[in-house]
Image 1 (cartoon, chains in turn orange, purple):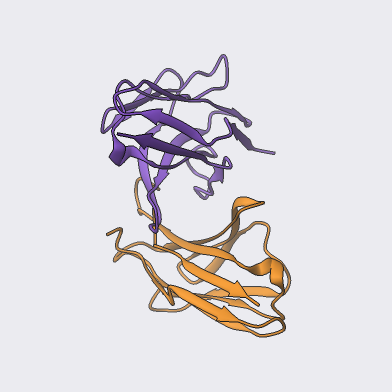
Image 2 (tube, one colour):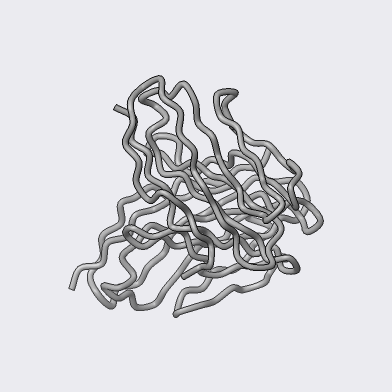
Length: 112
Length: 114
């Protein structure tokens, strides 16, 4: 158990819909990262938050957005979903001193 | 930009065989290098890491040496077990002081048969 909690574990929805994925980092970790894992693209960095503020942005679509709340949990919002958005979405938090990333078990999104 | 290239799988071995998974990288400066492992149905776990040239990371019988001259970080294990079956990812992050944003390779699926 990494200490990073993601919900839901599985989600099935239809094209055009909107979903929210939730992540709770390890206790004491201030940074949260979101990654997308798909068969064709591999693991892609989406976005990072540090103590409530956006710190770095990767290959995140405009239809996607994220935020980190005062209690440090984070949400990834995916809207106008397309078939190609079907993937495993991972959240990770980083150790304050070593920077080591700890990953959650992921949220598997299926868009039909 | 930064990139990681690792050998494509899948790799299938018999128990007690020797394992090598090649990984090369492109980066500016001196990145930190990592191997992560993903067991079926689970998230990624850090397997080992090296933060400077000639460092050797090791864990659970796996080893990898940071080779700056060949920009490589190949993963090796002398005798694999069935329980090592998983997907292995090579990754790098910019030098300390950056955001620890990892760039991953595409992953290599290892299957170890009894």
